[in-house]
Length: 350
Image (tube, rainbow, N blue to C red; front, side):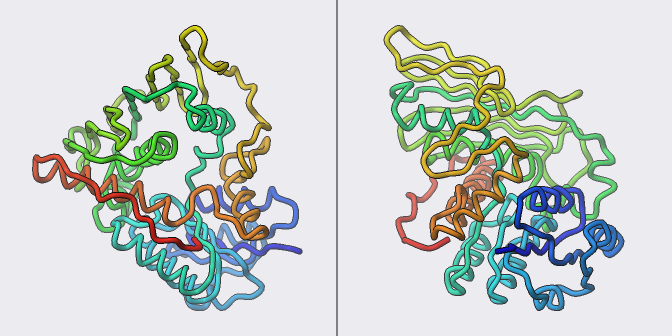
């Protein structure tokens, strides 16, 4: 059976979504809609599909089974709700919303419509990180003690000035944390569990934008582990994301999406740094193939549709990182540590 994917948005990430979808046998792009009419028209022409001038016209297109949302972040929740009401499954780019309240609206709409909701957090299916997740879940490092995360990237001034939405509260939802650092925060939540408290500081130190280009934070996980987190778009020339995890049995270091160091105490379970060897491995029932990161997310989401399972990052999982980012912002605004609510236990399909 052919799966028909609608592309909502017309920028670079929507092009990535469309290419990833069409790499999968039995998946086709069905239609395109984006507020930037010229970009949407080009994307539709590249895939020889209709380009709709309005969201409502786009949502009426059939056949269409899944919508991949790649519009500005501030539009994600409202568009997810609209897709759900049209009976369409949704894969939405990170962040799934710019507030926890809007994330919950998206989740509730998908629950009510009986459609699936997934979030593009592709790090969760990077082969080395899948293997690391399985190792940590099996207590391979023992009790986690200290975590250090650095997202020291560089964006030139035109990255913001040439965009109508980047660097704005309304459409970007924040800066270096909400847009760039959220991938690493999601990975930390995925690997290490929930955060209990966060204390943060933010500033626009290099770019003339409404939101932050630099942030630092300390986190205390519910497990008792302590962490530091840094994110910036002002670190010339830019460096690979780095995550260091120290536990009772040693330390593991991730650079970008690779485990580059695995220093374990004698007698620890085996786990090795990988030069590139983990491609093709899988954990639990989730798909990990020799494919692009966004294709892996599509493959996992389609498996969830087929098997009635949860995607690797469903709506409730996606909400966790939004809630953590907003708590960091609240701490930076008030100067006080913020305690996050305990994890929700309400069951749901998304």
